[in-house]
Amino acid sequence: MRVDLPETGTMIFTSDAVYMGDSYGPPAVPAAIVNDLSAWYASVEKIRSIAEQSNAMVVFGHDAEQLRSMRTAPHGYYS
Image (cartoon, rainbow, N blue to C red; front, side, top):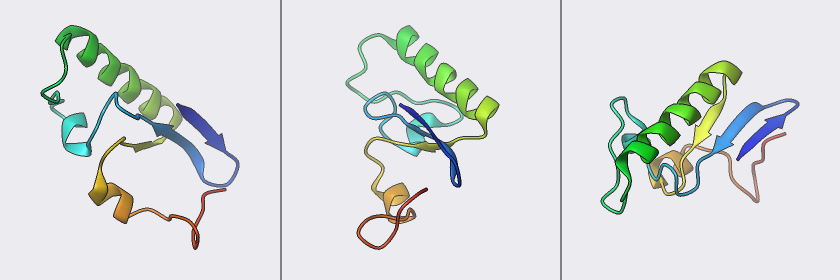
């Protein structure tokens, strides 16, 4: 999901497409549950392309380390 915020800029939420920043790479490394590698690699490259074109922050679906580095409710938010 791509969200364009007026003050923060563009954010892309990968959900389960890319679980963790380590999977995003480069090089991209699929999770064990990926059953169609070529489709997964194509998805990652599409996300990477959109992120580069829009200077987006990519938010991974299950990356606890990344989450700890972000502003979160109730004290922080992105606008």
